[in-house]
Image 1 (tube, one colour):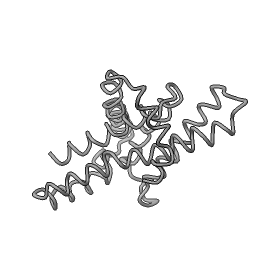
Image 2: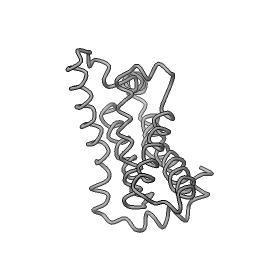
Image 3: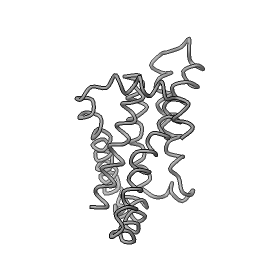
Length: 184
């Protein structure tokens, strides 16, 4: 929460610039991007003769377990959604998009705002985002883990729009859709 407090003026200004159409475009955009990536990974797995049974990754098992345990406990489901669907995206995007990509990497590449520099920012922030979601080194052998490559969409949005709010709305959209799928 301290992180959000530190950048509150930037957040307020960024959210004030959002238009209603932005919510319609950005909320589902990462989910669609991840679905497309999942299909591509499934095709690659089938071409190479691997099974796609674990394509959805270990997150599904965790969410299914939570769903079974708390099905009748609505308040815990609401709290889970607030944490995973809202607070998590705020904190992650402020840390990775605003501080690392927006402040640190931009200041390092200030004189050189070339396409290569922007591509480097996008790839580096995506790799850091993916590592943030690692549970163990075994995740690298799980094809479902590579769905996190879809996180490249958020640093890309930030480079194109310079809007922290759009990346947060996009991230909230993906997490909320995922929560709704597993808990409804």
